Length: 438
Image (cartoon, rainbow, N blue to C red; front, side):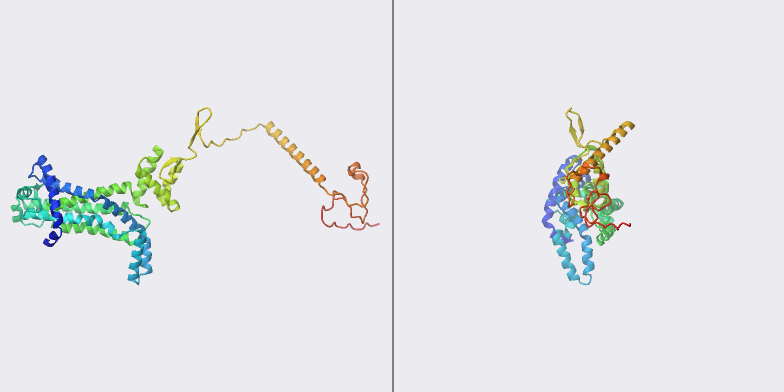
């Protein structure tokens, strides 16, 4: 541990300085030698660190979602090059480079907290051994050694003996009970944080080895915290319990307001968003418009929950725009008439009036008359456009001068038969008549 402390000695002084500054504030309220003053100083240190790590937490969320998206492609690469590990690694790195993801990004918050964690451990260990460290001088060291949290000194451990605990002015039972409760709370908060991530914020449509690994870590991490926790001082347990609670709350906020696509959390979020948008007729928050914009941009690639959301907006007469805004559809758009009355742009379909029997009969007779007139006009036009007869002898009288029954039939061998004569073809070669029997 001395080697680790020497590695993180560059940050020990800043951490001790921050704790002393918070202690000076809380000491005026609760008293400089109380456990509340020193305990709240450690809690405030955690909050300050976690606020500074929010950008890394955002990167962690994006990296985790990107890794979930790449799981099907990674599985294909593993199956394709299962006998060639080198080629498999090369293809994996190529996939990460093309998608712009980094597997280590999901570990950034934990890695960034490590220096502060070991620096705080080194400070509390110095308090337990009675040695000054950083900006903590002799007077502050004596005040910190007197501070107790529910009867347990800040520098006491679960594994400490009775002699060491008595030197810090406490009883072994109090130390064991307080440290055991804090270890259980620390492990339980870690388990719940990982469990809500797996049960609510994971795309259930994709079954990959990544999900199995996450499920395994859900049980491994709490056990690790419980094993290592018995060797942590009470002050470090306060630090780690606080950071676990912060992570749990921060993750609950993200799952509720920015869930992973295809997860149960997204289904619940889109259901709430549907009620909110249909009630107000628009997306009021910027985060809502961002989610709607992403859903519209997917087009046919939307999942089941996103399609239900779009259909619910359509039924409510709303349309989601490409920029994330929600406007009223054409069926609900209002227009102002000449009288100044607001009406819908798309009027309802009007049903025709029911006619009486006499009106229907007169309408039928009128239609029949118009049809007959049309047929007569078509026949007249057809007669005008008909070709003249090809008879060798041209009659001096017009054809319509004689009745149709008194017209002289053409001679047997003549080719000048009238095309208007019934029983004959209008065009093409004519069928010869059979010779008459005398």
